[in-house]
Length: 324
Image (cartoon, rainbow, N blue to C red; front, side):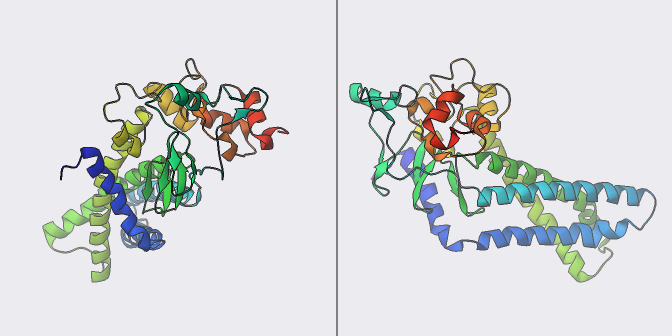
């Protein structure tokens, strides 16, 4: 039986659901790798080198400062992804309707109003959640809910990567690559010394830990580099991992504002509400993105993240922001 490339690619995501039983074990595994690495770098090799004197002490000090700085940022970004809700659809959500006119709000209802005139479009409906789905929203079979701008369910963070934690996920990949590269480079001389001279200072346990830390960090550095390059290319095109398989023969991705604005909207930099934003936004509010699920005490941040053309209008749409 013939199977399309898109169907086969989607099976990759279905395969990940088989790993749901691992649960928080993956977090412990990550902390375990961090622990082994810390022991090898700080306690076994560069910590004692601080007392050696001369150039060795200066090199050890520089490595330890950089190592701890990157480690703090790595752990911060990691747990930010773990504990940040990726964004979900409010119960019984539906496109906003102008009660007086009986029409969809022009800022948020364009796509749904177009459905009536365009037979090729349809309102997206989740049969598992039994509710409508906004644009760029997908159902996660692991979490059991629809996730806004879902990219994928990551078993390493035991959470979905979506609209509200994707930036943290990118930072996690970035700092992980820097940290693992630093560890690999700093342990490489000890690794070479062992295979050249056949011995290295320390106990067999410290030798084994150093060897294990080097191999693990080298493997993670290479694999994370591939993921980082992939996700940078996705951000540049303003798309997600799932959407990359859905685009198929689409000649122009409607959310693509150009590389510069795509990066600005993802990272809240520059003037995000630029020309043409009304027709193609990051979350495509003109296509009924449910801003009501983003109740926050920081309306300016919400304004930047969603790319909404009017902050006063946004306050009208989100009741919790009216008094801010």
